[in-house]
Each structure stands twice: as C-alpha cells, then as structure tokens.
Image (cartoon, rainbow, N blue to C red):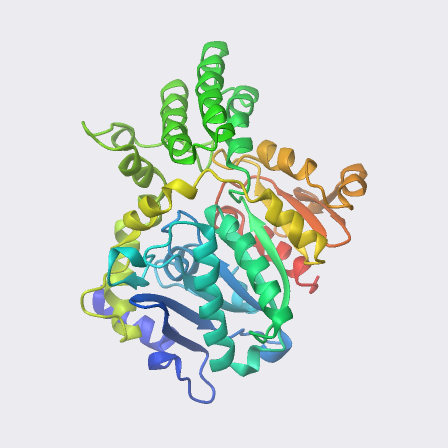
Length: 439
C-alpha cells in the first residue's frame, strides 16, 4: 500500500520545488519563513488548474484553519479543499479549479510550523496577525506574479478570528506600502468572532433541535451564564476554563452530541475524561486532536514530509499543536466583532458563512453579533430578505440561502456542520465562485 501511495503522490503532486523556488511550469511551491527569531511558519501553494483560464486570470485564496493549532496544509488541504483527499484521490470539489490556494500553518507551532523556544508561541491574535504579515511580505516578494491577482482570505472556526485580525493588519500595511498585494476580501466560515454569543445560544439551539429537554436547557444556560460573567469582568482565561465546563454539561445532557455536526455523536471513549486532566488538555482533546487523525498524521509525517524535503528532522507535523492552543488560551474568549466593523467601514469585502448543523459556532450566535454591528450598512442588510440557492448536485432542492448588501454578505449553508467543504463540497465550491465573482 505504501508503494502504491508513493507512486500516486509522485505522479500527481510531486511537482513542487524545494524551498519554494519553482521551475517554469510547476504547479506547486512551498517554503518556511522565519517570522520572529526562532519562530518558523510553513506555507504551501497550489497554482490554480482550470481548463478555461490561466492561474494569472484567477484569484489567490489563502486558507486558515481553526483550533488554534489546526493545520491548513494538512486538514484544510487533504480533508477539505485541496486537489487530493486524505486517500490521495483527486477531489472533485477542489477549490484549485477556481483559484490558486495558499495554505499556511498558523499560528507558529501549527502543522509543520514550529518554534525553537517557548517564547516563540503567539499568545494573542495581534501577534498572529503581525507574524502573518511577515509571511505575506515574504510570499508576495518571492512570488511577484501574485501581487496584482485578487487575494482573498478564507477561514474556518478560530481561523476566522485570526483572519479578521490579519485582514485589518494587511489592509493597513497595503496603505502604508509595506506589502504589495491586491487584497480583495475575507470570508469567515463558522468563525469564532463572538465566543460569548456562541456559548449563550448553545442551549436554545439544542433545545429547538430536540437535543435538550427542559432540565438540560436549564443546566446549559446556567453554565453559560458563568462564562458570561467572566467575560463581562474581562477574566478571559477563567472564561476559557468555564467554557470547557459548559461543553461538558452539553455532552452530559445530550448523550455526547458532536459539537461539529449535531446529527452525529462523539464516541464514548472521547467523552470519558482521564482523571486529573487539565481543562486545557480537555479542550485540546475536543478541538485540536480531531484535526490530527491517525491516518492524516501518518500521511503528513510520512509521504508528504518526504515530498516536501525541507522539514527539519526534529519537527513533526502537529507536534506542537497542543502548545499552540495552550498559549492562546487567554485570548480564546475575546471577541473581534469590532475588527469586523472596522473592516466593513474600511470598504473591505466581508463574507460570513455558516453551517446549519454546527453547534460549536452555531448560526444563531453568528446572527446575534452580526445584528449588533455598528457599520452604517447593517440596518439595510438586516432589512433584506434572503435568496435561496439550489443545491448544485440536486437542482430544485435548496442548498443554501444568502444575503448581500454592499461589501457584506452572509451565506446559510444547509445540511452542513462546522466543516462546510467536507460536508457540502459542491455548495462550498459554488459559494466560493460567487464570492470571487465567477458565478
């Protein structure tokens, strides 16, 4: 089997160049960037492959994974939108047919990114954004052919929180002339923009979907109130710890509902907490480990690592993921709604999209913070009626709804959980085309 995989990988994706120095005709490139002393971030680029257009006529999309600690080059690439799936089979709904894809392992310590010392880990989104700016300055200097191509940032989960901060930092850097790129917009998928709004709506959402009874609703709401009090007091580390308590209350009252898709359940083994386990370890087990399945880890630390040929011997894919989550714990429950407001006011195209079956970042919570935006266009946006979209595979069956007003859009993706491209690949691809004005 390993020999077969090697042949497949060689014939389909072994077209890149060591250290990201691509030869003419190459469809891939990758490299490391030292964003701070001893802090190294890894990126992996796929040039767009379209039968009707050259890559220079298509946009560039940077994908940011969640966690924090989830790997874009691994999970986003092989589980969601890259040209190959985890079994190294061509993905029919890959976004490479519509855009060039730039996967970045961020924050530092995620995926193949790594730090040589503990102070290299980011502790807040401000550091995450400044690190990404260094990487993008390097990338657009190394790849000047992308400087004029429309550049979009797409994200998922905590990646959306980082994407918002990165977008604002990038917008300011472009204005100052410190980076050359054609920034065209940001898309926030099931994104952790207002953590408290998500937590406070878990109970009502689960109750209306028959996953909580009256007693369970009261238990979840009471636990959520504790988080609210901590956030209001600006005790964000405590809020993160209390957030893990709410999750445990949800699991107990729903018999283990899957936070990423309410139509599924967590396996019993995952629900049993080892004695003495810290809340950080518990949260990492719930939200970081699922992005590092054994099969994906074996692929990334085996054939992919061999292909890339620049990964240091002492670095393993996902080896510092839990530390990434730990160092960001104090920032985890802080909202970035004000950042989204600043982006909209600055004229940046902002899209919010959410899966109907997602619990961790439920649509109810997303709608709450959106309605509170101070951007001058939000009253008009709120007055709009949404428009249905047919499922691309089943015409006549509704696959999504959307609303657009000026530079703000919202997509409600049906029959999808937290990982929309995995659950509804054709619909996610159609949404991408609409956002980048190809459909």
